[in-house]
Image (cartoon, rainbow, N blue to C red; front, top):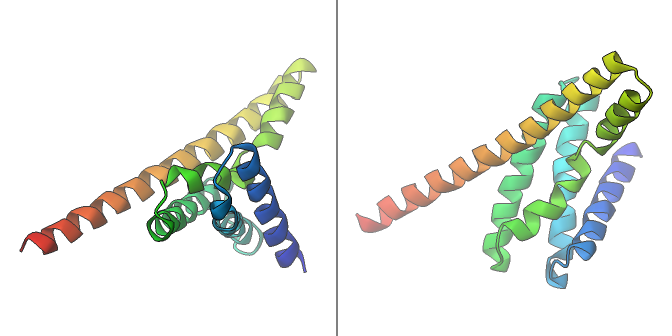
Length: 149
């Protein structure tokens, strides 16, 4: 049951952010599905496999990037149309808020712990997208090499 609830809420949050950011209507379901797959990758790795937050976010961002490339090719739209809304479930908003709150309450040790979580999460997401970009470039280069021969 929690699997279905996580999938549906992550899909809904991605579609809602797609509406806010003015994504074309025909891409709403693809964006929602991409965001849900990224979140489910993160959630399954954290819940069932006990992976740390960095690895789970890295693989979630990697899945989002790869699925975004697939949908961009099939729907003839830019990749960023699918990337930006799909990141919403992975963004570390809660820890960022708690870091600021702990700083305001002058609990600096707890604040630094939350800042580290935010930095690891955002860094893992960025590295996941970088790897996706490298994979896409390698596939394009390989495809162009085969076509020229």
